[in-house]
Image: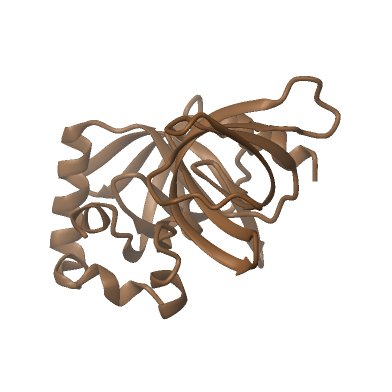
Length: 233
């Protein structure tokens, strides 16, 4: 519960200004939400996908952040581009600035219980929070994979059903208990070498006899690996 409180997504919907690295002027944007791991923002210019962007974010006259973030996803509504950005570098000082900004401009977001943001189906997933959907968007990808249960030295095979930069959903015939540490090798079409990563089982659900759907939280956000996987779709 404490961890989820720390990563609560605070809804803002406030006009802000940003200045992209190398640009000479600030441009207008709309900050949709923000937390200590990333933000959603709407703006007219296009940002390069699957790359790190640097820019100044002016939240108010007396509060400016130096942002370094990965462009996780993008969608277009009318003439505006909406982006989900994940912070690749954020200092404790910046976190304090974000908190003070939220407390000043949207105090109701600070005191609101985290679980009010979660629909029932999210609560049942036992590991996938609203933040996963907003910043670490889970995208449907089917890839064969091989895994190693490091705790019991047991190997197995599976197929992914969805992937995000920090999580994998897979279907397997092996029953895996929560907190099981795994090593994963994802076979990506057109790539000779499998994508290697490590993670931990956060939930497991039986679909039928000897068939399970498993949610895995990766040890760290793998942006380049996600990019490779998505190009295989």
